[in-house]
Amino acid sequence: MTVYATARADVYAEMSAPVTAFDGRKIASVAANFALPPTVMAPTPMPYPLLGENDVVRLICSPLPPAAAALSRRIGEEIAAIFDSEAATKTYVNTEASMHVTLFHTSHPDACLPFSPALRAEEVQTLKALISSTPAFELTIHSVILAASGTVLLLFDDPTNAVQHLRSRAKATFGSALRHPNHIIHSTLSRVLTDTVSPACLAAAAARCQQLTAELAAQTVAIESIWYVEETHFYSAGSGQHEKITFGTALASVQ
Image 1 (cartoon, one colour):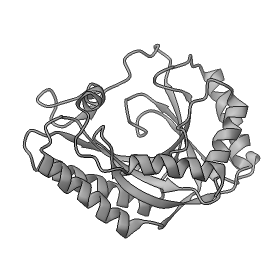
Image 2 (cartoon, rainbow, N blue to C red; image 1 turned 120 degrees about the vertical axis):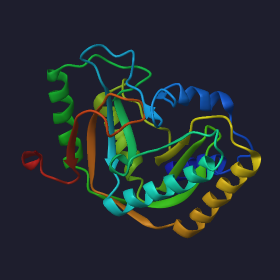
Image 3 (cartoon, one colour; image 1 turned 90 degrees about the vertical axis):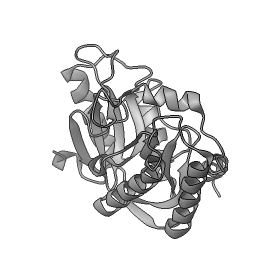
Image 4 (spheres, rainbow, N blue to C red; image 1 turned 60 degrees about the horizontal axis):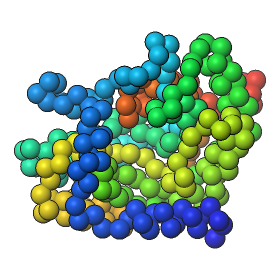
């Protein structure tokens, strides 16, 4: 097992530990970025409030292929429905069209950098050069987990360490401003937005996550492209302008 794989396995083991109670402060922190009923009909991600007029969060992620995106949406809905069975609980499920694996940010929500058309063109051109020299790869499903923050995650293993190598190359290319998760490779499926879940409901959701893990573990998911997302709303890869770049495509042919 490589150093990358060992570190990822250690992180996943910690994340997979049974959750017996949610962290109310973490749930409140996430919920603060949503408009919630009765102000709106259903929980809705809010726009980033502190960006300059022309600035955006720049997310680089890989969209899940259609079958995996549909599966992710179904899982998110199923676990959310367990929590929604208690009337006081509010949840949010990511849209099928926005399901993705986060790779890195060139401008992170916690450290948003200035943006301009010229900078966009420069970043996209740099990404095209990086991605065109990277072959498509496969991830394998590791587990479905429920975090103490109320977030339902689909975790992936990376048999060829393709994601870690890509993140390392991106860091060398974009420099210290680039942010990326440490070791974890994941898709966020749904979120609990109220600290109102009973122990019995939490236990039922956690048990279903374990069942889904047993059913899905080691299934492969093909990763063939990235999105350059000019993200405008919290937790919303579906917001803002997208540019798709395909792995292994010659630079001259990428549109």
